[in-house]
Amino acid sequence: MLLQTKFKSRDEATRYQIAKNLIKRKVLSGEVGHNQQLQPEMDICRDTNLSRTTVRKAIADLVEEGLLVRYRGRGTFVNIRRTPSQKKLLALLVCQHTNVNGAYDLLIRGAQESAGRLGYQLLLANSYNEIDTGMEQAMRLNELRVAGTLVVPLQSASPDQTTASVIRTLRQADQQVVLVDDLSSDPAISSVSSQNREAMYELTKHLIDIGHRRIAFLTSVQTEAVVEREEGFRQAMQDHNLPLPPEYFLEVAGRSPSRQGIQEIDVFMAMREPPEAIICLHDLIALNAMARCRERGWRVPEDVAIVGFDDLPQSATSSPRLTSVHQPLTETGARAVEILVQLLTDEDAQPRQERLPCQLAVRESCGRGLVRPS
Image (tube, rainbow, N blue to C red):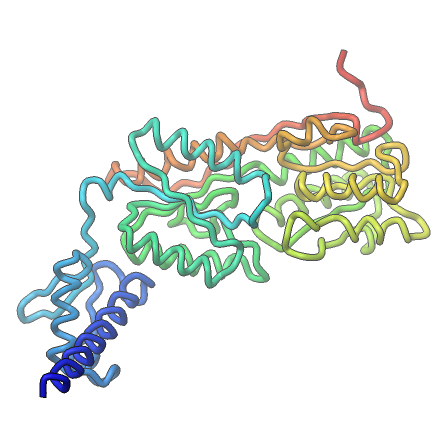
């Protein structure tokens, strides 16, 4: 009899935990958002095949934990309460691959410095550019009661949709959100990005001005920032009446930045008329491309000019030094935090989209016509 009671107690505890986890996930995933009503207890019982006593106990615990609130005669509602310390908790959700020292390091530095200066703590989360991981990280931030999150868009086949899913999950938990390194197409979402289109136009024009005509472009998956850079490149080529053969416009293979730009160099070298200059979407692609050129005996800039975008620290020390566009990444991270804090503290604050100017950084890799600094 004692053994039967023990097993029955364990079984009840398991059913209770199932009910609690199910309801909690509905809240943290944004399926039921802040101030929205939870489905009636009897419906939950029917959907889960659990008793009303079990479901009611799970709901009572989540009320105690500050995720739900019950109103007599009205039902149960999501009500995510934050402590004073949680109201000072921010997060930055990036899509950085492992072992890659790139633009996100500068972005993170700016965000951390700004958060500390304003009296906030900044948590770092990483989606590793996977939508499932991004959603789980968003739910984890909701569980920690983070007050606001900076979101770097995922680089997927449909980045607008996948990033929007992550943002919706955060917003449903009453978080403020700022999109970083991308211009939001949703007027209700604040964003901070660079003037990608204008900067890429100037970079392309510089190559044209110093004599290059056959110019190729290495791009990647279509985030808003990528589309803007492509548009700037195409506009500069069009304004100078230069052709752009389809084979000169390639999307890099693979998702890991450590491999991007390598096999594309082999493709260009095999052409009957290879490009004179190659514009890379970002510096890591350009640095990989230059390394591959050295391996294959293609001299930079004598045989082909290569330029990048971001102006990472390693671009100024590469051999040859890489011509790039200085993107204000540290400033972008800092400004994004400032906007996020304003949204959290000022009831009258409105969403805003800001685009920060970039600056051309001319070095040896772009080739002939370069005026070297004294």
